[in-house]
View 1: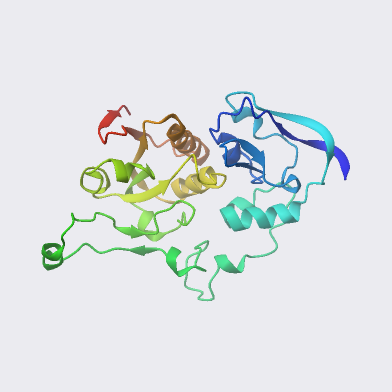
View 2: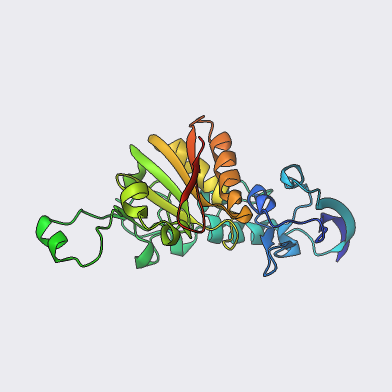
Length: 265
């Protein structure tokens, strides 16, 4: 090991907002089980400090100490596997010379960057039920019109996203708001994420690419009233800014009692 510059985290100051994890192009920062920022692996940290400006509490600083050297190739593979090819191209000093077999498929007619390796993450549209099917249902009608819905699994280039109204919802909202499908989801494509428990490091760049690549008619962000859930709004704000689209979004805040508290944007 050699002495070099690397990120240091003051755990007492860290409030678990997760903004640093999304700002780091190398995916070096994650949130641990106590919702505190930590270095995933020292070889992923290039020591340049792109994360410093987004930390609202001043919990991050650059120090010089003994550490494993930054490994650009290992970092590229790390980001490729967690964020995809587009994000991996932004890794500091990495050469995008390999492809992740889990991200590609042999058929040449598939659009680029689709994570096809897992059948459960294959993009697909869902057709609405016929009247006879609806009559046979015991539960309420589902308004879900595409799959997958988790942000880690969604491709920014999925064809169903273009020319759509988009809802980005915190995971808990659908369980809290009883009328979620009818009042919130109907007529929209859905992305779900948890800013507290997810590895949010790929989220900003993925959403930015999604906004750049597609025509989005409207954008709605639904979150819970709890403080940690506000991180979803920060992620979307940064993604909109990075995309250069200038799209405005509506923020809906839901209380733990299942009531809509505010719709202030």
